[in-house]
Length: 428
Length: 91
Ligand SMILES: Cc1cc2nc3c(=O)[nH]c(=O)nc-3n(C[C@H](O)[C@H](O)[C@H](O)COP(=O)(O)OP(=O)(O)OC[C@H]3O[C@@H](n4cnc5c(N)ncnc54)[C@H](O)[C@@H]3O)c2cc1C
Ligand code: SF4
Ligand code: SF4
Image (cartoon, rainbow over all chains, first blue to last red; front, top):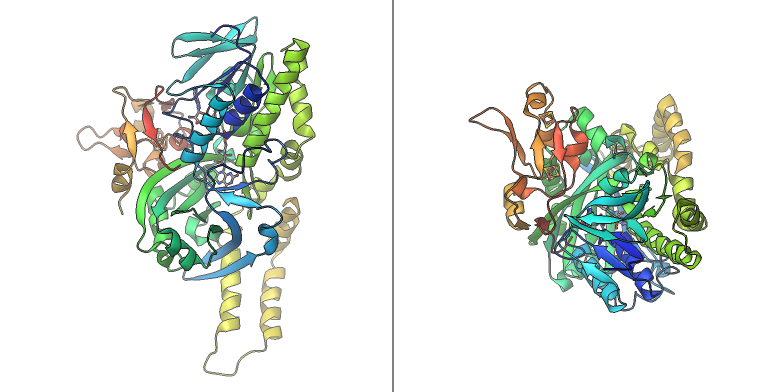
């Protein structure tokens, strides 16, 4: 392992994208993954938005093991015993290019790891990087369970907790305010049955988000994604918000969600294949002090790059793009023969010129907006009560729609908290 | 379905040494015992024999939730050694 240009820590999307670009450009790179193969520790919702990443990794998508092209979007507000659903579909989600795809990360990342190897990168599984090699405060390689591996530069893509990012002095520990836990079931269903059940054309898919009483007043929500032959169904719950209320045992929340009449028929007859859990950064960029140092860079979740926008959940596109840009910065540093912090500052410049830091800056505060409990009880309840009035025909004379609307609007708008919430929502 | 049954479907390679160590003194003084509720795999419990908080590390999904949530900082937690722990086939 003499003469390594770069060591990449972590075989998730950020690390794989970095290693792929470096190897493709002819640099000597080695990637360490602590699991059996890249993807064996990865977990996501999930849906990958492709448009943002195509410019950075244009050549991969024809043969990538993607699950279904999402052509149907649903969002459901849930109250106790009632719900309101909004559905959107459009030709624009299909053409000229598919807009987003559902993915299962274990097969996807594994395939990506093979691509890295094809272009000449070394992928070493079952090896955990335990420390950084340092010389005069400069990072000069890594220690992997006792073995020292020197390199010109180290790209840390070790995920949301990033203990190595802390060791490098680039970030602090993850804070419970800035993280949510996602836990999900992958449920097997026949391909044709999925299409029938969700009203989909062959190969097309649905992304369905849920919010409201399912998280018992705590910041979070539910999700359902259709894969080729399975469904990914799960919940996301804010860590600090949950510890403040402790409304139930976490596994129970998922069982209650699955039992809801809106959900139960969607998974009926399905066979559970796997249960998984993973943290999600929700404003975690706040614990990151710097994105680079002497001989070291931070990418993906480790850098806190992820955005939950309520209706779009993104992290994979940020991981792929930041990994590719870290590789670009390293390549330029090699051309200059200078891996110092000053030289690697180019990384931040590249990120600033891309959607990664532009979106993080524009929407970095959305997690605070979404943290407000009223989104999970008051507003779903409001929507459901309004719908109930609309659709219900009672024994007496029916109220005019305009009157019902006015009554509800007054109720909402006379509440000063509504105005506060609306004011906050300008951040979205 | 019970969470233990869900975990039983997973593939785990279990190290003989736990990657999660609790500071029992802190746990004894802890009223909330957040860990009992927050672990999505339901791995924390109170031992009937000793009355101590115990964690069944073999079923750990390595999410790190308990580490963040423990109000006393009583959990020493690291990723399992390379090749050990949960191995997702779907993710
Ligand atoms: C429930 C849930 C739903 C989500 N939904 C979506 C979605 O729909 N769309 C979207 O775009 N994003 C979504 N995200 C976010 C997205 O999954 C992440 O942002 C993305 O996976 C981050 O990729 P990464 O490469 O930075 O980190 P990871 O995928 O976490 O990869 C880190 C890798 O590093 C390895 N590693 C860590 N430490 C070491 C070490 N010391 N030595 C060796 N290897 C190490 C790990 O084993 C792991 O393989 C979701 C996340 C969750 C949890
Ligand atoms: S929350 Fe922390 S201190 Fe309290 S019992 Fe659990 S591990 Fe121990
Ligand atoms: S890391 Fe996650 S699964 Fe493992 S014990 Fe902690 S909360 Fe439970």
